[in-house]
Image (cartoon, rainbow over all chains, first blue to last red; front, side, top):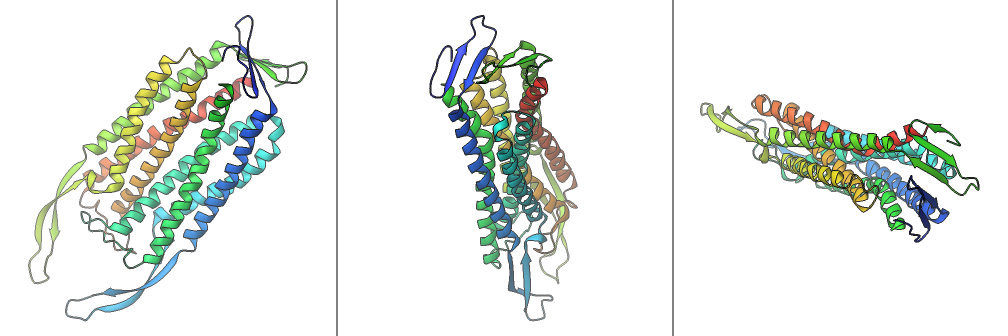
Amino acid sequence: MEGQSKGSFNVMEGSEGKGREFVVEKSASSIVGTCDLVLRILAFLLTLVAAVVIGTDKQTAIVPIKLVDSMPTLYVPVAAKWHYLSAFVYYVGANAIACAYAILSLLLTLANRRKGKGTMETLITVLDTVMVALLFSGNGAAMAVGLLGLQGNSHVHWNKVCNEFGKFCDQVAASLFISLLGSIAFLLLLIVPPVLRLKQTT
Amino acid sequence: MEGQSKGSFNVMEGSEGKGREFVVEKSASSIVGTCDLVLRILAFLLTLVAAVVIGTDKQTAIVPIKLVDSMPTLYVPVAAKWHYLSAFVYYVGANAIACAYAILSLLLTLANRRKGKGTMETLITVLDTVMVALLFSGNGAAMAVGLLGLQGNSHVHWNKVCNEFGKFCDQVAASLFISLLGSIAFLLLLIVPPVLRLKQTT
């Protein structure tokens, strides 16, 4: 770092040792900027698809129900909808908020591209961090409930439901996978800039 | 920002407009450094307590069970343990990993305090971000299952269990609250430095 000049960064040690002068050439910040834009577009698309896939998820199955032992088994149509489980409601809400924020932050980033570091960039970093927390908590909640639906739990006598609602569960799983990719895109928005900047100074 | 000098930052615009010279005095970085250390200690303590509170959670209750309609109701002792639910196992694991990482990163931060920005600081920022994702997904999973235990869900015929295991559920709720505070400490580790730096330049 001391007195080196590599890649597109020039790092010069001040003669009096008071500070450092960073002359950051355009190419360095443009790589970070391009990565940022690509990740925001990906985050927007993935969270949108994840929310739509689970939001349109609905299945009606014929389920055997026995009201009294002496009566024959009844076969009744039962519907499975995503908003029956509060974890899925939270998950859809988290994806919808993250999706709306991704497109808004994309526009704000494009509008502030030439202005450099400032209040807007800091605000976007703060909100990116909040989105990571929101999305991962939503994914965790939906995955926990999805796993219960798939496997059930004998200790608390919660029976699995995915044997009856296979298509519904497959769609939940697909949405979860896509949402996880969207969450990783938000995670990379926080990880990539410091890593790229470090790579270009060493 | 142009030609201003406020607080402990001096921001000077380069005469040729090629870059900016930031002379960051010690007090500015020391505030960020102190905040970082306090938040890491808090994150360590809170995730440790959260993991211990749920890790020691166990309750045995006498539950009425009816095997056959013609037989009288049997009262059998049933135990509730945190590791019966995979969401709680993931939650404890997430808190344990975050706790171990908090103390390790605290030691690394103290050891690298005088070296300034470099590979170690970037690595710590990346891992802080991963910890936020890990902790919030664990919290989301545990909260979703905790809520099911508290309220049940009539659509999937999952009965609430907290009416039988009140003490167990209270301890889960306490652990969740503490873990959420620990997760916020990790979140602030990512949010505070850019906000403080921005505040000191404006």
